[in-house]
Amino acid sequence: MAHTTTISSPANLALLFSVLVCAVCAYRYLYLVRHPAFLPFTTQWKLPFYLNRKYYVNFLIRFVTENCKALFLVIKMYSCGVIYLIIAGRNSPGEDLRMVTLFFSFGALGHGVLIHRIKEMENTRLICCRSLPVSLGKRFAQYAWFYFCLYIPEIIVLASLAPNHLYYSEACFFIFFGYSILLLLNSLQLYNFNGMKDYLKVVLQLFLVITIAVIPKRVHELSILFFLLSVIIFYRRYYRFEPKISAL
Image (tube, rainbow, N blue to C red; front, side, top):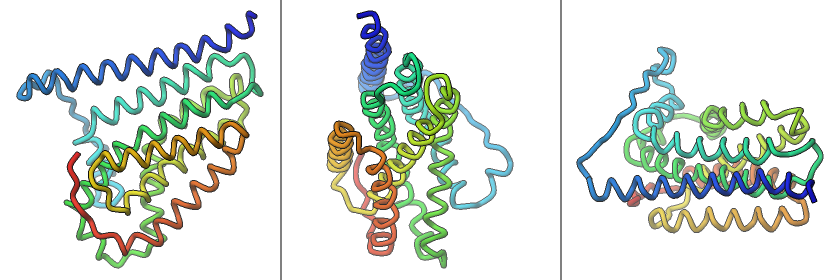
């Protein structure tokens, strides 16, 4: 009986943390709707000099650090917080990971809103870059490097939890699984969605697919499938895609 309580406690903390984040964000947006001209605080991030060089990845990083700071911080607080709370409560490596995988995938899919914002910026400000003589392999590698940099906080949290709460193999799986989700969300942006609602429907469908795969413990195969799909969709859709600006 004590063993069951120990396992459920971290899950309850993670659930409470999720509800708290949702409530704070809802209150924040409600406050901004009622006070549209009020800016209580601003954050200024100064990039290192080597990030000011005009590489394509640097444009994406600068957009996140200058235009999506609050969104980035909220996503990372939720994702890293849930990962730490629910995994740190495991008594030992080797316990069932299905509930952990569901919480983890929900945090990874939460990056979809940020990825959508990034793609909208690319479709309006960096549209000329599509006509540059850059191979598809190099362009995909640029996106892969960018999302690896974006995923560093989760990698640090997962690495800190091994080997006391996770086997190294389990930590590596979660890193690859979350990374493949980010790449797939990026490639799915090469389809024209009618606004954020349609895009979030696809994100919800991905979560349902993950839920179905978690039950028979087929998430390892699913992570490989997500990665392969991200590559296939990118190569098939990149030059066929016609940017269309959609409202948030």
